Image 1 (tube, rainbow, N blue to C red):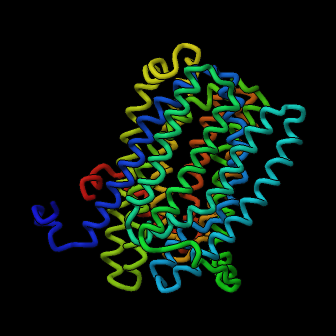
Image 2: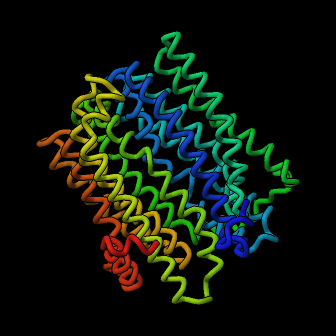
Image 3: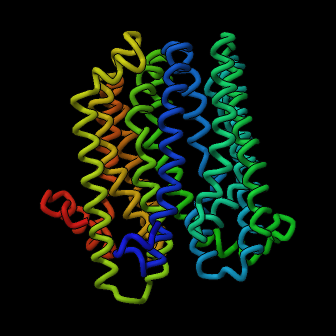
Length: 436
């Protein structure tokens, strides 16, 4: 196919990036379509109260997710690209670290949920099932290998097959009117299946987890580079999910269900900037020390594309929020429309944040990812304390958008980030959008 396109015929790296991005898009589009359909069906079936309860457990678990991932994702991908001869020790060490981190996270989650929601066993078991999934996802280091080799199609095979099987299971649960806990168990089953398939595909590529080795000095090096990203991920989850925890505690599970429905729609397309950037990231690493002018020109084009993407989606979602909520969730979720119209604008800053984060990682400036997300988290929590009691779930949406914007652009307060902030501001100029 590629030989028919002159611009791509003699550019194998670009062809590989486009192919990899296409696989990631196929994965996310399938999940967006099928997942949204089944997710909406589940939300209608459960109603705002139980749907809110479930989302409370998921959000609560997510707050501690950074302990499971340890911020290793892009660091491991970068190291595999640079030192492919050390593949087994890098993957084995990353797996060991993630396993220890996820087990620690499981203990913390169960202890904390018992304190904040005592005598609510359903919330406890939903949180347990969610946290257990993080433990099994330690094997997702295999996906880091496929990302580094720009071969994400193998991860797509594994995760989509598991997703489709469990989707059929969830539909069966809806048909037989299963209780809420059954849907939590189905979520864990999906992680089990995808893990088994990832290991099988790793083996198919003539590699084996039996060769993995945990090396202490590599673990120290990984953690030295990843701790800012781990703390950054923790801060991200705080300002992405703390509003749901605070709504659940301050307003109740029904209001949380209404808010969560809007959030689900507003975030359903976030895979687009992530898929684009994850495919471009290895080439950013490989271009280090080469033509810096060309490198920053390409980075500006990436920011232009991200701004165009985020603003375009936000405009459409704002004007169509009422119809979207009515069609998908029905009248019982009507109050979600106003939240969606506001929340969708956070996507503009998400796009720019994903792109700028890849630059920070490539430049080994991960500590600034932590600083800026910590600022955003502090702003979000502070605004939530003021806005939720006075404006309810609409106030929480406003707090999310403001904190996202503050977080992304706060990097300009550091000398190393001033150039990137200028590039992000330039990306808001419509005339720039044609130069992508």
